Length: 287
Image (cartoon, rainbow, N blue to C red; front, top):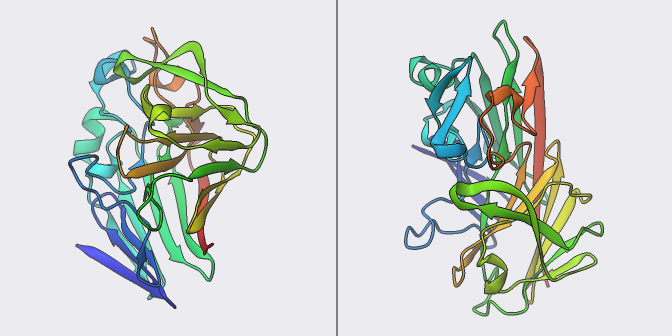
């Protein structure tokens, strides 16, 4: 139940489950996280119809509380393959009885993965075929090997395209976003990576200026360019051999939030018949 894409010395594998990228390599160099469940059993999940945690694992729609897991349900659903070539594939998820039990809206989520001369591009499109506004968030959550190349985790850093604020929101129990912030050792555009950074959950840049960030290592660099997703995040676990570079349109529930899904901060509301799009491009270069 996977699709293999090839272009030159690149190779990528995409699963129908979740339209998830499960492998990506350059010249035999594996870049994507392996999905070892000892640390984290996923590779690059697609996030929809929420991003992050809902309070107590429940969302409220039309006054009714409904179950909703972290990052929504798209990653656990089988997509339909609608188009494929040697270098790209397009997969689609639409609402059904199962989805409407938790999320009573009509939707179409389309994911296209393409290999290019520079790397790999993932395009997301959310369409509202229904008759009322569609509240949603979407995003990408790819994990990469740390170390990216070689065997030494030292010497890795994130370089942002713009200067970012040297603090991030404190993530409260249950994955909720508090109004407090904590400092991080960001030096202008450069953030040196170490285990201590991730001892208090993810680093979330909700007012990110940068549309590009680069994971630099002694052996090579991985650049991520983002369009249509305003929030950026970095996540790992202390000692874990992976690092996630994430891009979101929304985020987890604020502490104390008890309102309707459509009123949650950073949720989008898509008009009937409309389509919203986002694009994330990855490019790897050797040192």
